[in-house]
Length: 337
Ligand SMILES: *Cc1c(COP(=O)(O)O)cnc(C)c1O
Image (cartoon, rainbow, N blue to C red):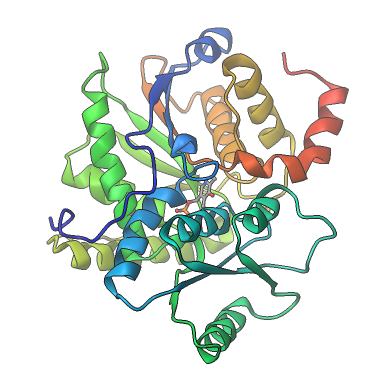
């Protein structure tokens, strides 16, 4: 596998910690749950995009004549915030195309985008892919040299961050008394899941890797499985790995995808439980939902009591603030038991 040969810059504090959720496990009577702290990658509040950006920035700088990063995402995109931070650290300009119209206040990630020096653009009701092209042309017309990073940093180069992360995890797991049976995490643009799966297969990891779908519901299942498969095969080409992936090689749970950024009881309770039992903050959009899904699967006896589960925390807690209303109101109605 040609991972070592890929150009890469150092942006994060790696390896990230691996911990056990001992109090949550005891109080909620769960199987053993471990947590991989990629919310602590260190780049301006951290998160999973840091690892992807290490390879993408490596590629960008390898092109030589790049001075501007362009990317796109939702208003509260963690990916855009980490891209803005990576640009600052590498001395590049950053243009962000955010979905929707300009909010009255900069808050959460948009405040951080601004502080990190990114120029913010809003899609309003326009097609984001067309606008992204437009933006790149405008940047070029102004005499700058852009490097375009796709939505979620999920292309074969970005996915390498999670191939590498899986190798990092396998080394950490050697210190645990028993093997990990399941890895659970939030899956949305696919780079994390693809990287983890390729890394797991390469390292002969025996556990199951299950993405909790955030944005694609069951009606979009085929499309998402195909996206994962295509991305995996392109990533294998880049790494000169011989295997071919198929849709059934990726396990995704679509049961919790009830609208992007919609915070309900599942997300809220998960956030409150982990905060109050372990002092760890999840985020409202991704990890709140994925950890909520994990707790629900435990309740439904999906796992055996003797299983060991690893929850991969992918970051995002800087988006808690703009979701305050959804989080506070319900908390006043009922404290988690
Ligand atoms: C982007 C993101 C994800 C999803 O990762 P993908 O590689 O896009 O599937 C999960 N959690 C958080 C906090 C994110 O920002």
